[in-house]
Length: 306
Image (cartoon, rainbow, N blue to C red; front, side):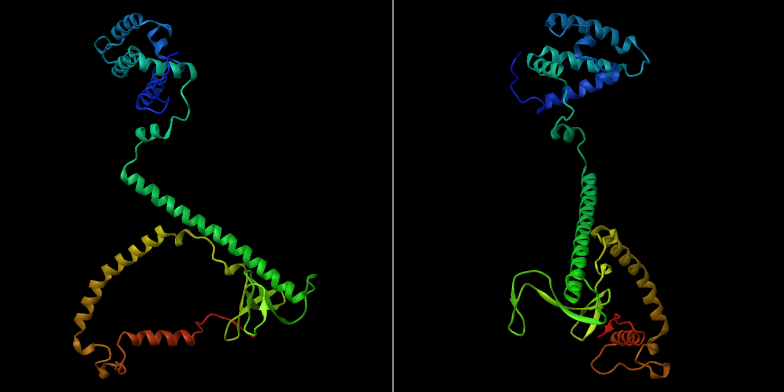
């Protein structure tokens, strides 16, 4: 067999052969080859191939098959196939696939040239890919945080109750090693790794803060994955918010102008306004009021007093 000058299956000419083989089988039937369609043997000389071509071209000529569906495509395909068989190099390449079969995986170059995506398709693919990867990272981090929380709770209970986990009554303050290298604590003692103070009270485990408030450590502490926190949905939500804000801004400004200058907040005590204190802006007044309301309503995060 003639040695092929280029790697098989890695050239534009091979891609053309792949397409012709697929189209020929789809049109003429499964297993149809260039030779069987021309009704010549694989070793047929060029003269025999030309003779078979003339016969087949008369048979498939569109003028002799008016109104026949697909006849133009079949006639054009016949010319391309015969041109391949007339070229010694191209015929050698086809004969290789004829004897060994067309590969199922035809190479990235083939699929890229046949199904070359547009810029929009690429952007959509990259957007979905990065969003999916970000969600996957959230899942991995959530699983890691859950395991760390469970291990920390277990270590705290072991420190409070002992290796046999005999539960004691009342609160027990313990130190839990979170890992890392040894360090010197505030009393000058060497402690292994990063150690934090924790409080065990029954089945609950708490972390005290600098003010003495206790914050329970449980699996709800970990942040679960959410598509709403991916960059794509965050961006869409922000764009929507800004769009709504821009639409409502003209209406609000028009309403303020109709009230007149005498009704400005902080400038007309007779209308019920209160002048802003010196050194503060008018915009700070509502903010101070909201903070005061939040404190009165118990808006601070709940904590258990030690």
